[in-house]
Length: 437
Image 1 (cartoon, one colour):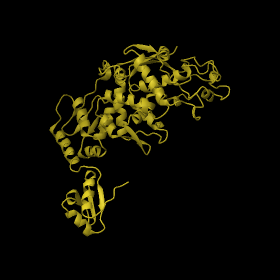
Image 2 (cartoon, rainbow, N blue to C red):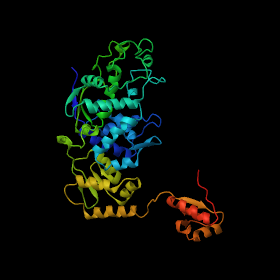
Image 3 (cartoon, rainbow, N blue to C red):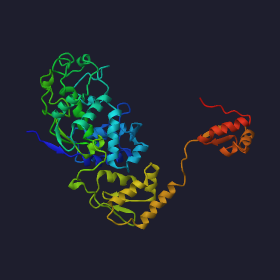
Image 4 (cartoon, rainbow, N blue to C red):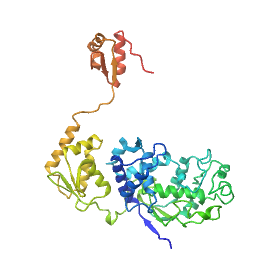
């Protein structure tokens, strides 16, 4: 008898989002430059920070989805094969998780970085030209079904959802034409073609795609709670197809039995205007830390992976449960683009009710002052004069000189917003600075 599992995903996703962002900030996640898919090492690293492990042992589902969601949402981008946080991603480190998750879901529906159906590896022929339909409309069809066909707080069997989607017209049609069905196949391109009658029924194609979207992306983001069993032998709607006798399953998502749109899902799909989280799980309370005057941060009961990664960014770990703040560790974090407000917020939320020691407060203030000694004001235009005499004439001019700064014998620096006025002043001096085309 199959082992049946029920997972409430709302609070898990909020915790995992923080952990994944911390992993990106630490430079530990890599994806293919062309495929955008996470590497094997990245899947292992993500598997270690997932709450309660992935859905199936040895099968990446949530670990596979998180890097793709961050890329689609503009929170991370690839640089030399390594994921790096964007400006939006850095802000997300301190932003409310439910707002970031809603953004990721809405953005992914229209900007996913790969075709999810490619994850149904048993169906061959997908890479042929002009076979599969555009993925964007398919995602939006499933997203609309989630918002319109799933009453918040109620369990819905996936086969009942399939019926509701067909009735409501939410059809994630997979192929560009009926003729293209003959290009898709199981095992053998001729005998196992999906073009034969009964070999491309709704549950086989649209249904499997829907299961992928729900299980790998909606559940990963915590929008739906899930009930599932092992995928092997879970569904028999493909057994009549040629070549299916060699397959235990048609996809890794076959084990999904039912979903429940939770408060986070209702918020993300616009079913509700405000997010009112469901009850926190009993084990979800954050473990306290103690900040000592000698700059040590002690977590006697341990920390969640995301919290440990955060402290790793700002402090030096001396033991499994002790970190030490220093000027060098704080400046290193600031140099990497991390904000001290992120650390302050963490300490305020997790410290044992005591105010930060004066020594630590002074250390943080000193780090802030060091970060403000030099500021980046953006790019400027560099003008080169024909000789030093011409540079002197321009620098002493009443109009042009007020907008230029000499930086060497023949060079002048102009802020971007002042360039039009400088060009006009130069024209009055009998010089022409042609507009760039």
